[in-house]
Length: 339
Image (cartoon, rainbow, N blue to C red; front, side):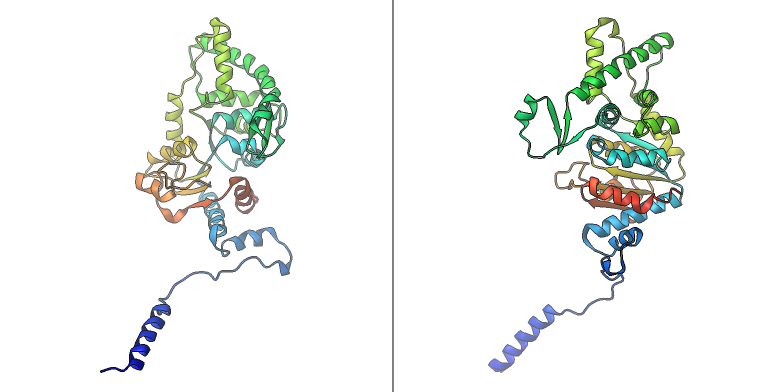
């Protein structure tokens, strides 16, 4: 019979073996962050994200995937929510559109109107904790920590009313109902500000799709335009033809890549268009949303693979991060050469 010492030894050996299980061979780069001892170089700094770990590594992968999109001359769809335009990402997106570095835009109503409003008056940095009741009394609207005084919308209405009247006159003469993408293209032609996303989108022939164009101040303006004068009641917009146009762009492309900032319908709209071609070749999502609730906003790229909206997970990544922090780094790493 084993003595107590033998039993204790076996017990210890079993615990030791459980704690120090032999390693299987694994491949991978060593974890290493940026070494500031050598001074600062932006591209070396961004490259170091790939070996830093955590979401930094996902950000590094995003940069490499976007570089691959560009190398393969993929048609790049950029989808973004209105808060991206509320923020200073508006200027980042305008840069990409100005230099034709992206080819199709998909956004919300706010993603259109807030760019136009900023050509009239700027938004203002405020405070996340500013009391809503006090702001309401002052006629100030809050988007996170960005303040938008009501006078911006009053100024926007002065632009929109004659613009809508012009489109209605054309509709009556030709019988043509303008699509949302035509509406945005024409609105961009009214802008004289080179800081504007849609100034450059119109100038460079980059289409912008927004099936929810009435879900914002533009919808308010259309309501007042139609209701304040019953002679304007026949004004209409067509969303059906834009679906055909967007899907055909995806079908006809040799390769496609999607970059999605945020979630909601803009995310689904752009990946769903790629379903018709058996999925986009590349995808980069940047969002703070998680998938536990089952929403498309929080879904990972691999969920879209199950639907056939993305081809595979090897050329996709989701960066769990605030896009206002992460996306400028992606642009700095993947787009600054303008190739």
